[in-house]
Image (cartoon, rainbow, N blue to C red):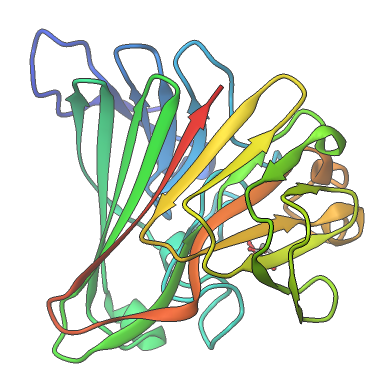
Length: 295
Ligand code: TA6
């Protein structure tokens, strides 16, 4: 395992980031804040695979059966979805960002934690699949009980383009049958699990027994994921919608990069913009954020 200490702005401050060789020999940044909050981020996809709040425990699910291979998405953590959500267009499912190698720009101590910046630009290969010039920047900021994940997309070309995007976090749960999600009551949603119908959410408290695969449109800034003994406040800005995905046993079983009973161990609550795609004119920038606070 190769370890390389990298950019620390103040020599008196202990290193906050180490670039390692992670699973599948892919490069991974290990980021630590002064208060002990930690995150691991693969340059492949700028994919966060671990987040441990200060004094806390792992809050992300990462599949033990995940592949770590160029061109293949990592299963679990926080996939970055861009410029296509799911299979809604001609690109690979959930777009290009999660299967491309990102550049690590720097890591900085912050007053209340630490931040790492990653960048992605269009390449000949990306333009073959999606013929647009873009720059994407992902910033991961950790500290205390929080993590903030920010995606900025710039149109660096001469023509406008449109895209859909999301953060697709897999939250670790100790027991899915005890977990509940609050804050989506009264919203219109599209339900892909039951034949693609549109409905209105009747309950403000969603529990997970059968498959859930829903896009909640014009979703509020905050939702809350509760368990018997812990709680996650999930906030977003810039993204209009919220996607909730729980595969249940039937959809989990055929997935080669999940263990058969992994459906018990995670729930995805995604900050997304898919109802109305984002359009950027040349030079224009869009930013979306998801912030998680663990209690
Ligand atoms: O966000 C929900 C979803 O689009 C589901 O339809 C489900 O397929 C999931 O994401 C995982 O997609 P993936 O391409 O990572 O297998």
